[in-house]
Image 1: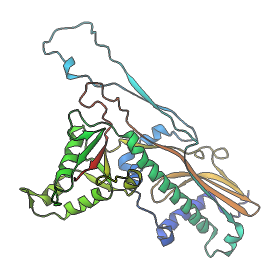
Image 2: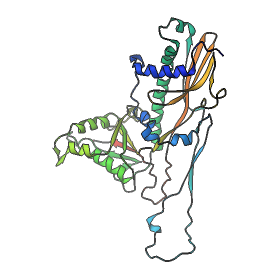
Image 3: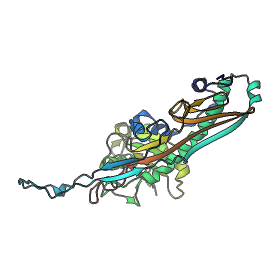
Length: 348
């Protein structure tokens, strides 16, 4: 079949080329949390388990066992041929709703293509990139909104925690810098069993605090601020949506921490799979998967040419999930820990 407009493969190549052109009108916003969640460092291959491909939806059941309490260990050793301690499994099911996620579409008159100085693939790539960009910005907001539902408890006995939120300071009462946030956040994450360097997601005062610490050089209450900052293991991830989604009119703002991999994007591509069924590339109708060259996010894409009126749509069924809050049993020092935590800066 002839394909006079543009092929699906040509659209992907044009998208990649459009990205390298660094067109100011196509400038991408810094989407801190979203870009990290789709990074190889965070994905760790789990997305192939949750979204198996070929246009198939899948429910995932996470089956796990709580760790045993130390109190179950006997210090007097005796041979037991039959144990009376039966292990029980826990489970949680994650379901992806194919009707929920992000979608953006637009209508293009084919006469615009005739007048455009760019080639057809490049002109369409610019329009597709606009759709992808707005979808990503909405996804970035959804990811930040999901944090409150995914966050878990701190370890048992953690101080200055109210309703699951730990308060810290960035300034003393006289307005001078304090190392409290850095020390308290790092310790709270280690105390909750985080493995590796905690990821900190924040904006406003939290982000500015780290900029001030980075410029620190001198002793503060006997501690060299610069040395302390460069020893810390926190990875600061700036995301302005933290202040948009979690406004704080009383104090200096909220921020979150997460362990690498503790939050995962789960998505489904309807048009990934069999040629002619899931993937279609015809003269006047196309449905395929196009990958955003900036983030690597795969979007379902539709192009339909109806009597010179070209409709394009990018969409993705997606949700953001975390670990269950019963990963550790009642009575365990880590009971309720999901390796995602919420903090509030309270300087007064």
